Length: 305
Length: 327
Image (tube, rainbow over all chains, first blue to last red; front, side):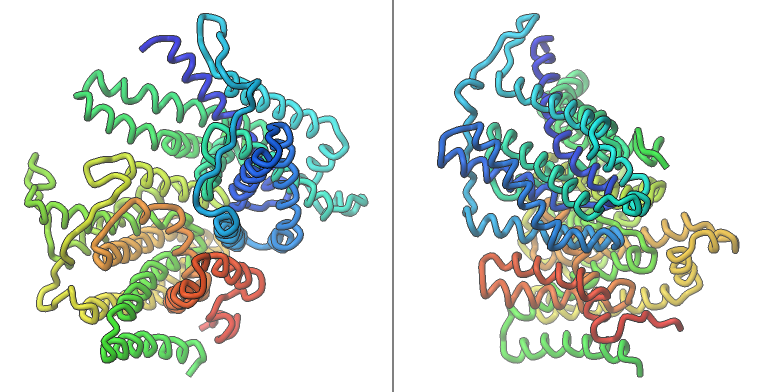
């Protein structure tokens, strides 16, 4: 095992983590402010990816594709917020889970209906393809590196928005006491729609960015959605800082687990057995991590009351 | 007679009627559909025990459905290939006997439910939903990456397992087995729901503090309910695997958890017979809408959305009134 390979895998883990953060940030915001579990968040991710693939196919521009993903996901988010989600804020979690599960069925089958079952492909832009040599002779894909940068920039932007801007103040106030800020003259339902659209846009962006390294297909959002749930449960639901920590933790655990566990088992088992035991354990590792964390902190790492 | 009791009777008559009519008209596919509905109903009744009576929104019941399925798959696979499951420290062989397989499915599901329940019940609300989902995913990915039993491709069993005195490959006879088990499960759940344990459980759902104040431990009530619930769903998984003679990780996927939840909701949460109506309705929708369009799940989604938004209480709520009897 070379250290260069380890460094590369660590970067992959980090890249996976920041992309998970884009998903998880929206989920945790929506939960924190509106108290809603949104299973359809993965569908918004898919909508973003499909919009990007469609725009890239039509214009050939990656930047336009990214903008299309943001806009399409935000519009889809606003649409479902106005028609369905809005009615769910006062319901119990069971109703929310079921209604948003129903939305997944509609989105997935609808997309299959429009685009067919074959995966689409979204190409990386030319100026971001190829590799770059980092310090210590680590060769790394420029695109993945730029994903890390974009993720970190979005995280900084989000923290700044929550901490410093008027809308951020309203969001925090909405988390603490929705009746009070309503009484102070803030239009709650518009605030909710805006938060939902913001979360949706982030999910759509993540879908487009990831779509360029994986294929764009129906159902692509679901594995990511579940990972994003693991992230916000680990981090503490409602906490954006928790989502960031959880996302990095999950990204690193998953990637490094897949890389290191088979090698670790190879020290004590025969090679073929080591691969199967190691990879099965690796695919379970983040769930074990989550169960472990909840055992000691039932409300997640940064979860409050 | 209350409306709800009447509806229960109609439902049972409908099951028997459809199966018998299909048998007389020699329509084995319809019998298989009725069997599938009966099996899904068992799974739903299982989930309803935790969800409806205990208020435990488990989004991971696919674990138990899948474990039941794999219990059947693994036992029958070893019987089929004449290889022992375990040679050391003591020999365990596969089996093709349904009652034994059911027993194993129930016990394994119950044991796993103790573990998952004990950990998950430390949390509540959304965390509970998410952690049960995560456990289900854990088993799902394990089943996918563990190559011994087919991994992602699953396991095929060539012949349905045996039940003494019956030919299980005959659709109507297998329906009879599954339907009888459904009735048995319904009877047990009805008794349990009206026992002092069931009453305490429902009380705990409504007001934990009061239950604690009269000297009960809500955690224990919940855990017991969760284990019973998991065991019933495990039985359904074994039956479903035997119906298809095939098990795959799909049984463990979160879509399965969602579907079991749909049976409960379509029928009516917290009513003993609710999931039976829900499962029957689900199969009916799948059959009718599936015939209309390849993309029938769009309509299923729309109907589900409608039920959740406008018809809370499901089919039972619509017909028998929203009020759950205060008897």
